[in-house]
Length: 206
Image (cartoon, rainbow, N blue to C red; front, side, top):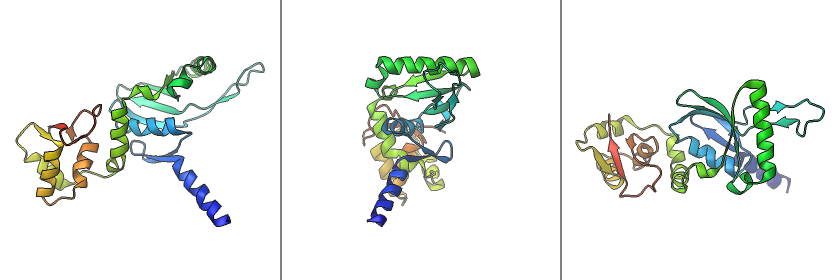
């Protein structure tokens, strides 16, 4: 029983952690909202870097309604902007208590560090994007092979369907996973706001 309990605890710890390709490290996540959005961050070109549970803020005022607060993420965007983010599901984000706490934390962080705190929900991305990110996350951790790059360079057309991409991968004696790796890395640009199907058109660019 002890061994089973230990294995179960180890499994739960693994489920609470996620490896970030952008950060090159594992992050501890608080719940399903954080996990879902963190995977989506990996595919968001506007987010160049993020960190989960970045730091804690302490309010030492005697009459303070809170004393310690840790944002869910620190985010840096493509335009160089850096700020903190609190993640909530759509329903929780509408609660008066959530709004009040968010305003208090936001005001405190700005007054002490002149850094913004934003409140984000999963509605930031479409369900199609979340599904694509979940499906392609493991492929994102693998590099596009040089053979796959060479194959793409030989294609004359500007667009290719995902079905044709897979056919060409097989025709060139490459592992089928290379088609999904290409899709994950956006080596051929496509719209992640729509489901990835055989009919999905991808733009070939150099």
